[in-house]
Image (cartoon, rainbow, N blue to C red; front, top):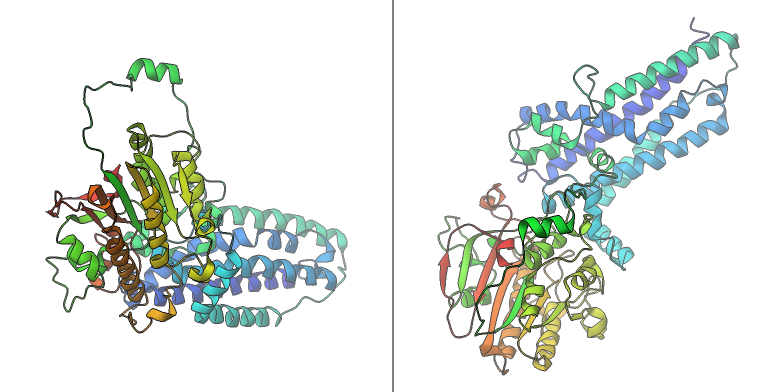
Amino acid sequence: MRKYFRVEEYKILAFRLFLAYVFYGIARILFTIYNFELLGSPGLFEFLRLYYHGLIFDTAGILYVNMIFILFSILPLRINTWNIFQKFQFFIYFLFNLTAYATNFIDFIYFKYILTRSTLASFESIQHESNKVILLFSFIISYWHVFFLFIVLSIIWVYLYRLWNLKNKKPQNPFAYYGLSIVCFFVIITLMVGAIRGGDFKKSTRPINMVDANRHVNSSIQAGIVLNTPFCIIRTINKKSVKKVEYLSNEEVIQLVKPIKQYDRKVHEKPNVVLIIIESYGREYSGAFNPDTKIKDYKSYTPFVDSLAQHSLIFTNAYANGYKSIHGMSSILSGIPSFKDAFTSTPYANQKIESLVSVLKSLGYHTSFFHGAENGSMGFLGYSNILGIDKYFGRNEYNNDTGFDGYWGIWDEPFLQFMKEKLDEEKEPFFSTVFTISSHEPYIIPEKYKETFPEGDIIMHKCVRYTDYALRRFFDEAKKEHWYNNTLFVLVADHANLIYYPEYRKELNINTIPILFHHPDGRYNGINNLLAQQTYLS
């Protein structure tokens, strides 16, 4: 039987798949080390338990990634042992495996921002960026150690793969050889289907999904240990969390709901509104939003915002409605939170919606949006057009690269001054939104301020200090203008970011943000500790 059966070929196939398990396991260990405190500092036995449950998802991920390689390996044909075919198989194996493996390494860093494994939707935030190559190299430089680990492990993987090669053999009994090959082909395919379904043909009616990882964890964030990134990306291909449905026609809705109502109310005051959305600005960074903190040796990095808060209405128990900038835009301006995906990635993104922009425009406001990155970055230009914003000012309109940070766009300080100058020319009343960029990866500040704003406990702290200073400069100059005293300033963050204090790693605090209302005449003042969120602003 042995001389008719492809024992050697199946052994080598099993060995090559086993290598994938080994390196996925190494990636899981490294992932846990990089995010150890965020994952709840699991003990050895807890980690091994989660590792064990993760093998099911590793199996599914490895089979998805290697599906073509496996099919070619078990074809009931003799070409499998030919040298040229084995070279082709080598190429296919590492093309798919190393591409997929690299996504695990991305999550060593990216996990701390989105608090889950990356999915296909995770890449939506960079699809509008025109400087992808520059950003890629900046990430490689900033996280060279992750890139180094990936390269070293990839080289070892290739070396181990080459240790065991197939020899070209001619079957002595072709009929038996091909007959048994066909039987094994269908047996292996059946086993693959079962493995992708979680190894249970009886109970599982569908392939396992990301949500199944939560059956094995005590805290949802630890699902990151159980899962692997290739599996999560593959399982979200062609998946939309929001499907476009139509239960009633527009005419039927209008007849039943009567959404348009007339109120006998006149708006007597029309103050200007300046909405400042600060990039990656967690509540943790600002002392004003931690008035009753019990954090030992707590330190604030926002002296200006803290001073402004003394004369403002602030919300100290506020939350972001998502983990990304594109989530914050729809939540803040439109009152539409993110679901699994950002609203801008759903089938409803292009339809007309009510928002702060539409309501204020109906009251005669002139609207504008400022973002110092490349026009179109984050999809903000497109979304601004959907909302009907009159004027968009980005890096193109700034038109002076002396203020360019080399990666994303214009530094906050000069760009906020540019915004102030444009508001000086704006007809009142106006509603203007600015989205800052400097408190963002790769966490750099202008060279001239490196001594002024030294490194803090984490790399984010110096950026927070710089953006706080940029806001101070903006307010100092705005106070000199005619429009300032008739303007409501609203400050909010798009989402939280890097965490230093363990208190903010708790699930309850991990995505808390500041919300502040300031009017120069002091009409808004005090501390509100009730629950609040970004959507409340709309």
